Image (cartoon, rainbow, N blue to C red):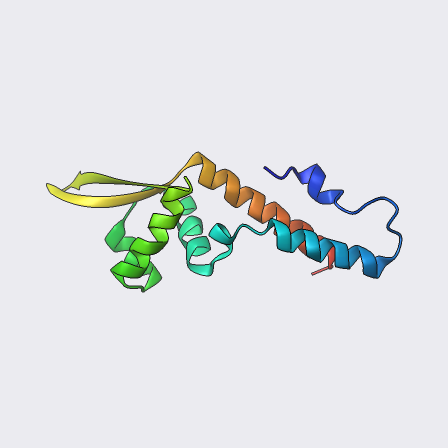
Amino acid sequence: MISEAFIYDIVDSNTSDEENYYDEYVKFLQSNLDPMIHEPKRLTILLILTKNPLITFTALQKILDTSSGNLTNHLKHLTRCGLTQISKMFIDTRSNTVISITDNGKEKLKEYYLLFKKTFDIFKL
């Protein structure tokens, strides 16, 4: 986990040149972006799951306007990394595939948010 204190103190204290600071920060940012979360569809899935803690595969597919194969592939990656959980649940006597975000997924999403929050602060966006 990247702590907020670490994010705010990434550049060596000897760095006085503002341009060098930005260069160093960009290198830090590139090396700390989690490709599993940074991919737009996966980020969207995780964000949807923060507001819909338990959602059916079909509902998620409709929201994302994507094919079942595409969604299955993204969920496979997210689940393999421990960010989401897939289970079966009966809803109105029908078996449904439901997806939820794990505690690890919430934590990784928070880290991602803090990284970008600091980036926006640094670049005054």
